[in-house]
Length: 208
Image (cartoon, rainbow, N blue to C red):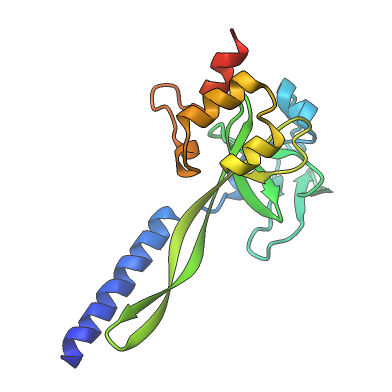
């Protein structure tokens, strides 16, 4: 019996570990950063600041993620410039993705077609009973957020927050609340367009 429990525990740990690595947000490599959007106006207009052209020995952009540093350091021909993660709007990667740093952690800007919607992959600790053992296991989770207006503040993507902050127009309010009845439904993406169905619902009423 003890052998069976030990095997079960090992299997659970192996499964949890494999899920953790598969779903955890991939760390952004310094070489992937193409430039910075210094503010939301630059982001909207596509004005990208490239503090280094990476054409000279030693040119680099360092996100300093391992120690959760507040700084982004760029070096161009030996000249160092420091940007603070909480003072720029976003970084732009070579694959076209954009990330904002919230509490020094990168949040993917997943959709900007109406509300700005963000996703953040992380882990949380949960307890699981296996036989007589109470085990703490880290499981992967994805949290979603949105911003609007000047986009300074991010809010959890919930129906309560949408009603409180953005669903001012009665027609849009009714359309959203009729289509999305749970917070989880707000996370649905239209596979054909790559946009969140929430934003498409809002746009469908704005364009009428």
